[in-house]
Image (cartoon, rainbow, N blue to C red; front, side):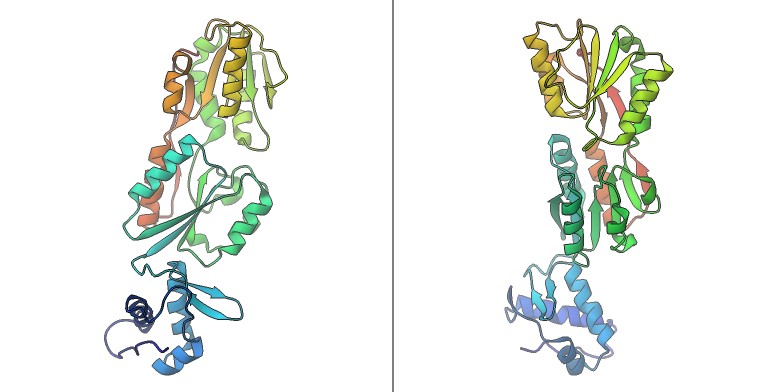
Length: 332
């Protein structure tokens, strides 16, 4: 098939007219999902335009998710939803209750006709690289959680910098990128300091910290707080094979270890907040209820999602440190 020819001197850029011609062919069902578009050379010849003009049109259709390119074969219709104006690549480390809040709020606040594809790397550097390399040029924006993976800049810099937004953890090598993030070192230090008078009634602080999944800044801030306040402390990756000791307070970034500690408290006959204390990370509705309420250090994930959507909507390239606060409950 051939596309409707563009009309010269219409006042609309030629590449935009080529885009409209493809959209019209899809709406009129002359092109359907999986169909091959006319070649670049034929579109160029039929409309007497430059190759760059055709490529600009096809590139925009590709970033909107309307078409895809297959190496050595050409361009094919990927979606018949021509109303999509922006397409966002969203790469999370993992999905949990609070990141689901972030995701849902992000979707809710995006402009109409924006499509989002979500992916997960599960702290695996190979998966992280593969997902990004496979999607270069396919999206208008890339939102990326690098987590604590090392050497990610070499992968991310393959993408156009103006299309990239770093989310949640901010590493030094990404200081020139747009971002909305948490300052984990300062946040844990500041919030533990706020609760110092309650923390001091315990004999020892224990941070349950996974080098693989938790931000290094969290450990640094925790150790600095304990050292400056002359508090006995320990850093462990798990309590699975450890007996709890009366007088300990546990700082627990992940919910799996939180459940293990609560279970061990019951099994060992301790009373939470009297014999042991708990400070969890990232507030959820469940933590308001469990054991009369779990104290948390938490950012506002809904606000993070809302602000991220605003940045995408307005093509805004800034760095925003999301607020973080201590929520005091019975467990402390």
